[in-house]
Image 1: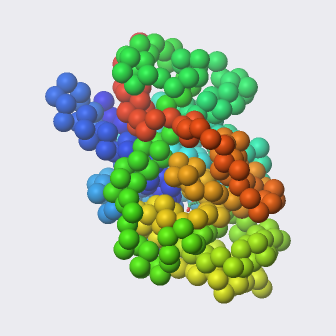
Image 2: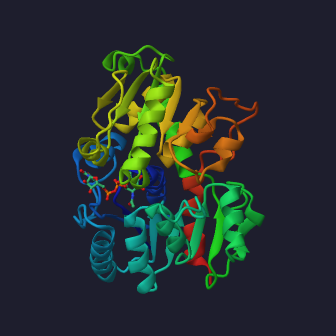
Length: 381
Ligand code: UD1
């Protein structure tokens, strides 16, 4: 049995880690023969955006590197389709797994679907309902080409049901990791939707344990625990529009002038800051993109997160750090409903987190469910 994982952009290296880890575990099991191949599209190529994640998580180097690099969306996706198709034809995987909503996700999904290779989408069913976001188009298209749709939460299952998906496992509730997996019966001719929980929670639990109260990090960035905010800003809909970019910079400058803010900057944002005549006030300290473990350690010690990242909204939620999302909408509405997250246009100066556990995104065993379900699916008649 051959499983092919495709990654290419920063968040995908992180999402792949728990899958890689669990695959490694089961490969030592004599009863299960699974070969795993990893393709890196090369969408992200800077050391800080790519290699550092493989080093930090101790993951193997990709088996195939497509080296597509940056470019216009059409050209970038076309290169990913062309080059991943070549690898699929040569390697003949039994299933291709794609992650999240980047151009790498869509390109590899199209190549696999056109070759009729079963396609599994990890982080399926999310919607922002904003087609201006390139990620929204990537998500919708990938979901509707997939055979196995792994959802991080209940809401994602419900959205897919509304879009016409009918084979929903366990009525959309999280599968029991011990009993639910082996009971899984499926018609492989019809796309199947499963609530597995979020792989990012698997990762966070792993990293959190490693980084608990890392005092070094505070010294390195010369900040005091719970006395600073963390900022990230890189989304195309924010950085491609001078108007949106200016709105966000003005919001941050006006609302947090007295707060020390650490801002690890994405390469694209650094570029546009040279073009747009706007700048942050002096309390915002711009630094290079951070090592993921350091980022989590810093977030754990911060007082507030300001971000347009999807993943970081949830990381703040899990860690109990209030978040302000620098976008017009979010595909993680549960974080808003819980009171831990606020869209920046709704921010009034206060957060009102609701009491209760923060477990809408599963239990930290998403990767175990995903691999077991793929194996069951491949063994189904
Ligand atoms: C991509 C994803 C986005 C994700 C983000 C994480 C899409 C449509 N978007 O956006 O969902 O949140 O990754 O970071 O796939 N660049 C470099 N070095 C690199 C990579 C990029 O300098 O290693 C610069 C280039 O100028 C490039 C620009 O960043 O043109 C944009 O990179 P690209 O991969 O196209 O999209 P991201 O903005 O990173």
